Image (tube, rainbow, N blue to C red; front, side, top):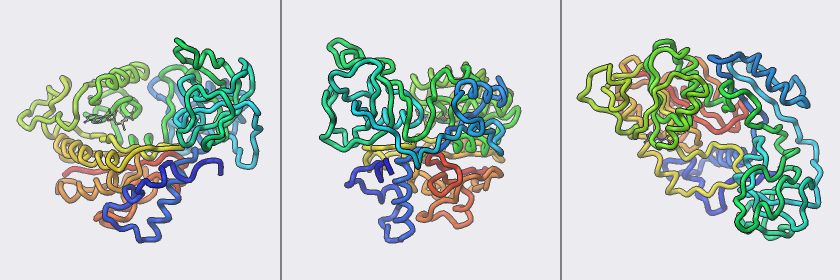
Length: 440
Ligand SMILES: C[S@@+](CC[C@H](N)C(=O)[O-])C[C@H]1O[C@@H](n2cnc3c(N)ncnc32)[C@H](O)[C@@H]1O
């Protein structure tokens, strides 16, 4: 096992993830903790692509991927059997192989290391150390600085802290390019040739713009659970960078009304760019989605002008909530704090309450997060069912995750309706949570 056993430091209180009450005595919870933390440090053995079916076909994208990966076996590029817009790229299985280690090394930060494991090259800002005397074209082994002990510009073999072997590559920038005075480090510093994750190089030019995007399977399932249909009126409350928005638009066949909102102006620009690239018919607005409701309004016509919206305006709402994002994989190191993790629930509740009011009776609300904490997931569902009599939880037709965790007041039958994606599921992806509600 080349990875650490937990992304968190030893003094991190893991209770925050798994228990709402101060009770972690159950063996089951203890087992989930150990398994989940170790799983978060590891890399999924597949990469998934969602095809933009409004612009092209799955066959066309597969042809592009095959052209790009001449050395990847054809049987490792697969059509997903259930999700008709999805292509799976299976990584090389390196479990039993030992990659060579070069004498020459470079040290990168842990964020850069996670990106490398997902198929990226080493970009200049991520490099911490390179041996003096390293030349362009040299073969190097790449290590992550596990405990953030390596100083930028370090020039010797790094033995001061623990380093994790990530893979090998070829030097494309010198020490002077990277650390020289007045040098603004940008661009590819190391072209990665092999990774311990077995993931091939996933470069930006892999697929023509707007044809497909890298998207984790739970995110795709989440939008399918919303079940967008032609001529629906749909609200995507926390939409940037627009990965789910463009999927919703494709399933609506660019008909009806799709409103996408994000709080951060720069992210709304990114959202608009994604929608343009994907040819997605979307009206994007910058707003705080906790404040986009005006109960005095009643006109449908106001929807296209953006917020505020009248109550009972939308057929379907996606609340892909801001969250502690602990489901990301791989995470070699995570420096988040208990305070930060706890800060999300009040915001998620405000956004959720707004969503309930904006949804038409008979409408569908999908709540999702890319985190693993009980409070942000089953905790929100339990709170919602207690506070909004008009809501019931639905088990979606497309149910590919696992059941919810114990530890909240969620009724047993409801715990079996929500979907968790974690170490025990067949889908080897990121940590994710989905709950589907109907309003009456
Ligand atoms: C999990 S990300 C959304 C990812 C997006 N749905 C996708 O699939 O591409 C959460 C987003 O919520 C936005 N956000 C945070 N607080 C918000 C608020 N009060 N109102 C609207 N958006 C908010 C963040 O800027 C962030 O882009």
